[in-house]
Image (cartoon, helix red, strand yellow):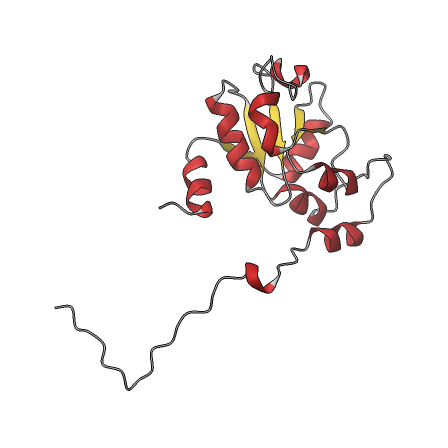
Length: 168
């Protein structure tokens, strides 16, 4: 069985990443890449990198092809363009980048550390109305809020007086 981290590690053997400060420089160039934010719409509306296209991860494959309700022509036609895939922390985007690579996108990279890293480097984020978001406000919104049932179970302790099997 493979875990989420295993899938990410395996995908990184095939796809590349770009650091936030390198992306910032690239965006100032004459030919900036297509920014593809794969977070859910409610995440994107709170804050995103200016100029990003929002296509949620759940419909990515359909958005990359013609003939579906989810088809995004700009994305379908970007197979030969530079594409940077963005998520919250840089994990979902690695898996999405790998999927896009399999679908024929050869110039696609994941934003390492996602919008969290972008914000940590104090680069600008904007809400859906186009207004800038305060770095500290974004940091609060980016902090995971796990419920107790979402935490891994604590390791079971074997009492010292129980005989452990010997596997020699």
